[in-house]
Length: 175
Ligand SMILES: [Zn+2]
Ligand SMILES: [Zn+2]
Image (cartoon, rainbow, N blue to C red; front, side, top):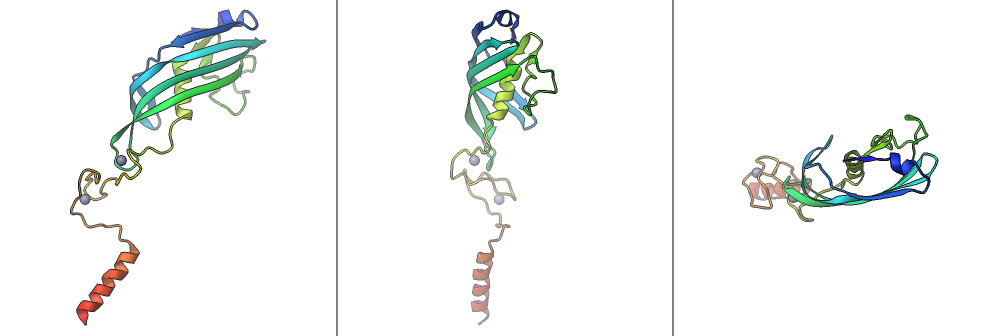
């Protein structure tokens, strides 16, 4: 949804508060495509501080399906967005602080709520997703999900300590 800022910018200290429904059904980024299972509207507040300066605060909740890092089973992950931003529209593009995406959601007098949410989801993206703390992962030979059953593959990632024990057994046999 596009929010028109011309009204709020017309007068100092003017504020808009709105609940904006989130439109996206899928979250797309360079990390991949993720199904959005549930979402709460973005509660946004835009305050005209002075000049062309805005104070933007927002809260939203999105539940995304992200594959487990070990076994790739989808994990329902709730992302809570809660942000505050100072935006000075009088600073020309390219001269904004290091925050390069700072104003990619504001164009002239309009604010693109979907783009803003996309930025915030990326910022809050979890670094690690596990279906459970003790997820056993998948067999790297046959792909069997080891949480659901075992397989007969030989463990190719030989633990060096194990090979010592094997050598000991071999020596016994040879005696
Ligand atoms: Zn898992
Ligand atoms: Zn296997």
